[in-house]
Every structure is written in structure tokens, then in C-alpha cells.
Image 1 (cartoon, helix red, strand yellow):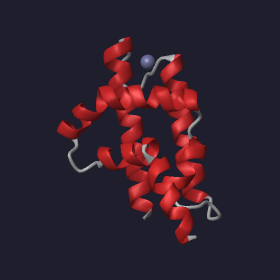
Image 2: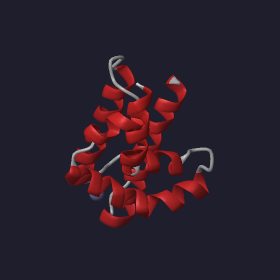
Image 3: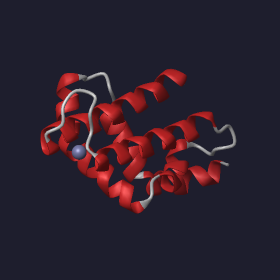
Image 4: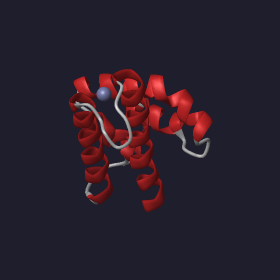
Length: 115
Ligand SMILES: [Zn+2]
């Protein structure tokens, strides 16, 4: 499980980097201020989720993890970088992540009954 979380963090970070490099003209490990904020934010969210044992299932907790503003932004990043990531790193499950973050309302209703 730890591996998939790490993979998830890497995936988000790579997507933000691709987006920033191509949209904002940054290079290497550099990100513009806005993207860096998103980068830090997403990392914290994943870390919190990763280390917080009292957290509910991820599909549920992501609803609270991403503020609407950040959700919109990461959504835009995913829309842009997602297809590129698929091509570059087919092993990274973008679809799973995307569903988890943005379609979690649907599954969380079902999950809450299981708890
Ligand atoms: Zn940027």
C-alpha cells in the first residue's frame, strides 16, 4: 500500500511539473509560484492521508482533502498532463486517481454503509 501512495505522490508531482513546464515555461525542478503552491498542497494532502491511520477510506477522505479551488487546479493539471503521463508512464494509474479525487462522491455514499 505504501508503494501506491508514493506512486500517487510522484504522479501528481510529475503532472504538475509537465503542466508548469509547458504552460508556464519553467524548466527542470523549477515551478512557478502558483504551481509550487499546488505541488506543496497536493503533497501535504497525500502525506496526511498516508500517515493518518484514523482516516477513512481514501475515496471518502479525498472529498475533504482537496479544497474546491485546489481541486479545480489539479483537475486542470490532470486534464492537460494526464494523457501525456499515460503515454510516458503507463504504469501510473491516472484514471484511478482521477476517479478517486473527482468522482469520490458517488463511491463514498456506498462506502459509508460498509462502515
Ligand atoms: Zn506553473
